Image 1 (tube, rainbow, N blue to C red):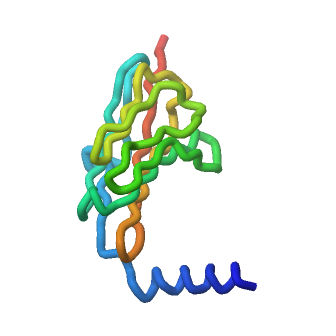
Image 2 (spheres, one colour):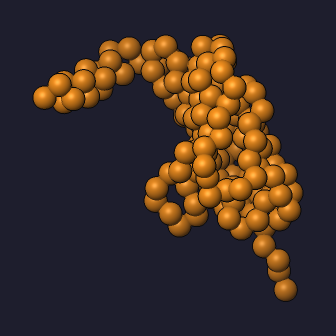
Image 3 (cartoon, rainbow, N blue to C red):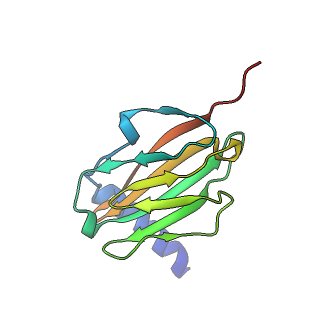
Length: 134
């Protein structure tokens, strides 16, 4: 019963105290095309103090339905890259996900979720790895 009360209280807090922040996708685009073997920096920006924000990056593979957590950064702590199906990743502060030497495995949606006092906001970008044409 306590868990249910917590969920209801948490849900109400986001309604009563909505987050006024905004997150902007890389280059303010919804889609980015990347050449195989390239390094791509997905640089999000957000309203608020990076030292007071907790960030989490997610990836949903093209055709998939479940998001995989790629990395987290809690306030002023160093970013932590989680064990991921994408082998070559890095984080550059304050909110840049670096995809290195990309291949077809990197096709999908990338999302940054920002949690700040008062709630959370997120933004996503769709990344296409260009294929060879004959």
